[in-house]
Length: 48
Image 1 (cartoon, rainbow, N blue to C red):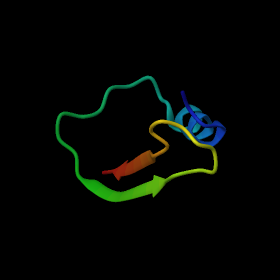
Image 2 (cartoon, one colour):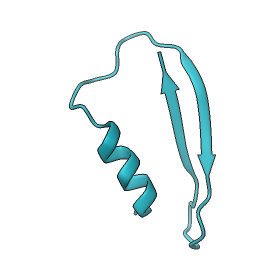
Image 3 (tube, rainbow, N blue to C red):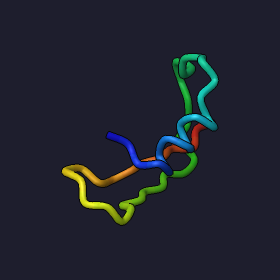
Image 4 (cartoon, one colour):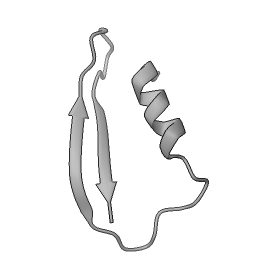
């Protein structure tokens, strides 16, 4: 399951490419949303 916000973020960021072998995580963000799900956490990582 995915929230509408999570789906929008994934669609906006999807490039069809794989992650590089090495990268640095610059920031991490979490969101819980308003609906009740078994695992209601969305985690986004900005990589460099």
